[in-house]
Length: 380
Image 1: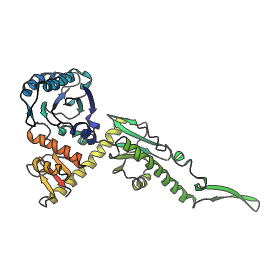
Image 2: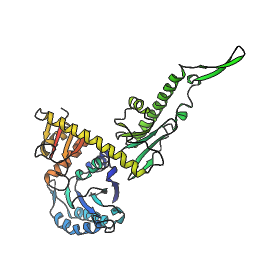
Image 3: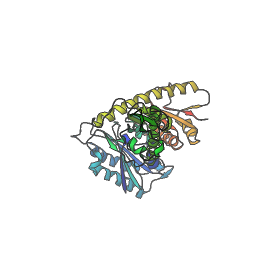
Image 4: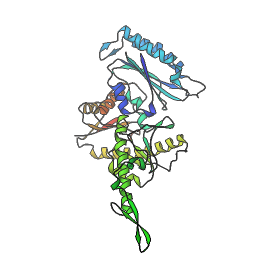
């Protein structure tokens, strides 16, 4: 059985859908808090082992989609969980929770900084709501260092920044324009005037205009190489945070199809503490996301009663399966810490919305104004 472990803070909805949402059951999902009393007391493996007997009893006669689990499937699922308990590398030295999903073919393990109550469930699919802290707690992003002398793409990996190899992106303006046609450059020559010499420029336009033109051609070359590079590593839908020359940002936004391009929250140099850089950018993104969520809730309230919204897990799931959901709003804490039937329908809702290109937004408790734990804005 293969095993995949992903830090939940850098998990994307595309990865979730690809690895989990298309799995056909049964799926055994276990959620275990780890190191809640400090890294010197790694309680996670012991707590997981203590759950195995209870799991074994519950799996006897358990039905998924109306069909009982056969003995070989039960043993396979339990054996995978037992292997997880023995794998010390999974538990690490950080507090939080481990979310594990086990199928007949694969074991997926995710670590998250969120503290969940322990529990487990057998169902036809994984509990996606436990993975939503990837969206809420630590927003992912791409960092572009952009100046005339240096172009570099970096991405966060835990609390550090890692360079991404981008051979299609010019490393500087000299590299971007170094092989352009000679006649397009600003040139000069000296000419004699009554025994002396003066300097005369020729080319396309005066010096200032040509400089502006060169910068635009430089940024166009960066965009031409950057966009396919981001698509190749499946990060083209993430926010692009730019550090360097602020004047380049409007030109970059105008030329690029990247959906979100933001200026870095402060001047960032290559010698800065990478952990501080990642924290500062994530804080900025959370603030921007909070503003966006408030606007989305207001939009939902305005459209309530017009036939363009749904409320509750059942009606929302029906609309999502028809491909009608543009945005699903799910209240934090109302859906995370239990394995109820309603929570299972919310898992299905998340998967359907992601599959059909919609967005999932986590709101604060009671922000939707009624008892339903989730609601949707519809496309039509």
